[in-house]
Length: 266
Ligand code: HEC
Ligand code: HEC
Image (tube, rainbow, N blue to C red; front, side, top):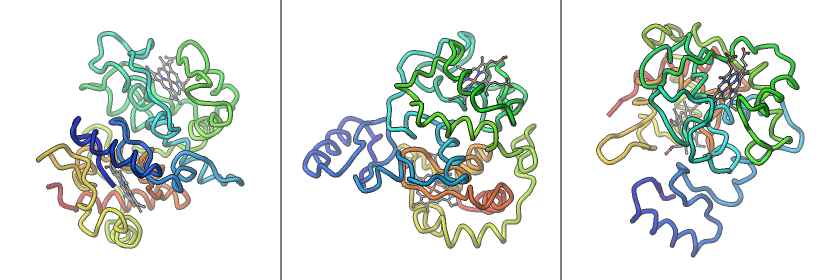
C-alpha cells in the first residue's frame, strides 16, 4: 500500500501503480490510504442487513469526514456558516467535527478556544431529537448538505449517530485540560494487543500518518488529541480498512484509550 500524501513524486508513482493495477482505489492526496476494490463495500458501502453498531459507527465516520467516509470530495470553498474570524478555511470547514468538536460540545467543550474555536454550539443538545428533524437541519441553508454530498440513503447513518451515537466524552476526558481521566489500561492492553495490533503493531508504530520526521502513531495521536482518538476507536478512521469497537460501547473504548497513552509517541 502506498501512502500518497507526500507530494507530487509519490502521487505520480501512486498514479502509475494504480493505473497498472486497476484494483487500487484512492490515489488522490485527500485520501489516507489506498484500498482494493474488494474493500470498497466495507470502507464506503453498507451491509445488506444493517445492525445498530454498524449504523452508529458509519454515522460517526460521516461526522469525522463525510467525504472520506462516503467516497466523495469535500468542497474547496469555506463553508458559508464558518465564521470569517475563525482560523480554519477551505474544505476542512465542511467537516461536522470542525464546528461541533470531537467532544460534540462545540464552543462549550475543547474547542472553547484555540485554532478550532468557532463559537458554534455542540450537538449534544440533539441527543434524542427525531431523525427527520436532524435530516431537515442538515439539508437546510445553515448546513447546505446536498444529496450529492450525503445521499438520502446515507442520511440515516448520520442522523442515528447524532440522536443515539454520542457518548459522554466528559466521563473519560477532562474537557478543561484534555487529560484522560478514566479507563482501565490493563483491559485496554488486552484489546489493543488482540485487535488493534493486527494493523498498528504491538507498539502502535506500524502505521505512521505523519510527514517526514514528524511521526504520527496511535500513541502520538492519543496523547495529543484523546477526544479525537476516542471517537475513532468507536467509529474507525473514515476511508480506510479499520475495525472499530462500537459494538462494545464507550467504556471499553476508554479502556483502550487509557492504554494508548502509554504507547510510544516517537
Ligand atoms: C461550518 C460550521 C458547521 C458545520 C461544518 C456543521 N454544522 Fe451543525 N450547526 C452549525 C450551526 C451554525 C448550527 C446552529 C447553531 C445554533 O442554533 O446556534 C448547527 C446546528 C446543528 C445541530 C443542532 C444542534 C442543536 O442542539 O440544536 C445539529 C444536530 C448539527 N448542527 C449537526 C451537524 C452535523 C451532523 C454536521 C455534519 C454533517 C454539521 N452539523 C456540520 C454549524 C455547522
Ligand atoms: C484492519 C486494520 C486496522 C485495525 C484492526 C485497526 N486500525 Fe486503526 N487505522 C488503520 C488504518 C489503515 C489507519 C489509517 C492510517 C493513516 O491515516 O495513514 C488507521 C488509523 C487509526 C488512527 C488515526 C487516524 C488519524 O489519522 O487521526 C487511530 C487513532 C487508530 N487507527 C486507532 C486504532 C485502534 C485504537 C484500534 C483498535 C481498537 C485500531 N485502530 C484498529 C487500520 C486499522
